[in-house]
Image (cartoon, rainbow, N blue to C red; front, side, top):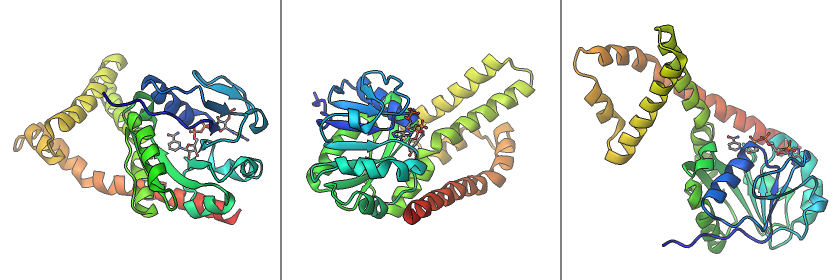
Length: 271
Ligand SMILES: NC(=O)c1ccc[n+]([C@@H]2O[C@H](COP(=O)([O-])OP(=O)(O)OC[C@H]3O[C@@H](n4cnc5c(N)ncnc54)[C@H](OP(=O)(O)O)[C@@H]3O)[C@@H](O)[C@H]2O)c1
């Protein structure tokens, strides 16, 4: 049996909205003891399974692990007070989209290590992707974080920040893209007379079934498509339209997300 990893004592979630709570949900369902963790959020709204406070001053002893789980635009406001709590024993894990490791290092010079993590929302059900990147974490820290993130899904360390950004644009934002594709299938079904409930179930099961088929049979996407599309048949007629546009469209989508990441990085560098 694999050992259940332990979260650092104490761990601070600075901000705990959609993504912070998705991670907390995943760790709770993996049986990880979150009693050493505290969520700091101005609303003071409860986070299931984690002590919640409204301000850094109420959090308690200086943190060993800090998860930055607020919006990147809040960095300027939060950093001046937060950095007074960071010691040479603190690892900072930043979820902030676009904000580069060098910028974080300048802002938090005393931290033991700075790690960027880019999770996606399926971490809540432990089927997430979490890209990890650091310029200064030692092997022990990397191993500890690998075992902490492994229960949430696929958690690879990226060799450079450009690849980390690529994973962010694809996997971090990915659930929104996939959700839009499923919604488009539902809409197409409804426009052809299916009830919303029927169309929704059919679209969702088709996407889930295809993903499971690929994951369990280990087949490539070309092979999966080829076995559905008989020559001159209905699927081939559909693919002829899809294939004209899809690659270019996805490319544009990822470029737009990457460009926004660059803008956020620039804004954080200038501040
Ligand atoms: N959502 C995603 O799919 C996703 C994916 C990858 C990375 N991320 C990254 O995760 C981070 C959080 O995103 P999110 O979607 O979880 O945002 P969110 O739902 O809006 O949550 C933001 C959190 O920040 C808190 N906050 C605001 N001002 C604060 C302050 N002064 N001090 C401490 N906390 C403060 C909010 O507190 P209240 O709860 O009290 O309002 C809230 O808990 C972002 O940097 C984003 O780039 C998100």
